[in-house]
Amino acid sequence: GQQVMQIPQYQHVQEGEDFTTYCNSSTTLSNIQWYKQRPGGHPVFLIQLVKSGEVKKQKRLTFQFGEAKKNSSLHITATQTTDVGTYFCAVNTDKLIFGTGTRLQVFP
Amino acid sequence: KAGVTQTPRYLIKTRGQQVTLSCSPISGHRSVSWYQQTPGQGLQFLFEYFSETQRNKGNFPGRFSGRQFSNSRSEMNVSTLELGDSALYLCASSLWWGGPYEQYFGPGTRLTVT
Image 1 (spheres, each protein chain N blue to C red):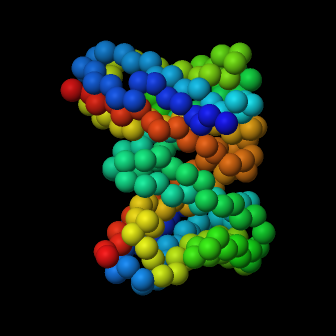
Image 2: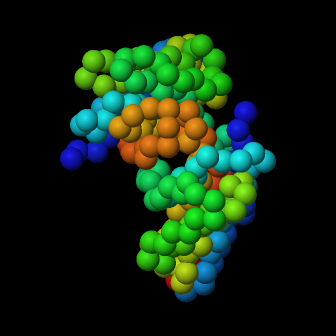
C-alpha cells in the first residue's frame, strides 16, 4: 500500500533558525496535506497541495509539492516557540495516510 | 461552529474487556474517520464512515469495529482489549468521503489497557 516517509524524525533548533521537513513517496501522489500536532493536542490541518511544483505560503511557512509529485516539503523561516509540535504530511486518496512525522523542538 | 467532540477523553480498561468510544462530527460533515495514534506506529487509519456505511477500512483486526448513525455521529468499539490497544484514538470529520478533503480532528480519547 501507499507509504509516505518523513525526514528528519526529530529536529531541535534555536529560536530564529529555519526548519525544513521533507515528505517522500515511492509513488506519484495525487495530493498532499500537511498537519500540525501540538504536544498533547490533535492534528490540525495546515494546507493541501495538488499541482506539480505548487508552492504555497502561510506567513513564515512555505509548502512545496515536487515537480514529479513524489515529494513535498514544509519550511519554516525564523522559528518561534509557538512552532513546537509534530508536523505530518498526509496523502488523501480514498483514506488518509499519514507520514511518520517530524517533531520540532524550539529552544528560546 | 462547534468542533469535533469525542467522549470519553480518558479511559482505563483491563485486558479482555471491551470499550466503546464516541465521536460527534462538525455540523454538516457527513464523513467520520477513526485513527489510532501510538508512539511506535504513528497515526494509523482505522476506518471511515459516510451515510452510515463503512467506506474504507485500515489494516486492523476484526476486534475493531465501528458504526455511524443517521445524525453522522459515530462510535467505535474494541472488543477483547489487549495491552497493545493502549493508544490515543482520534476521530476526524470531513464534508464528504473518499477524496482530498480537509479533515477536522477531535481531541481524542486516551485509552489505557492494563
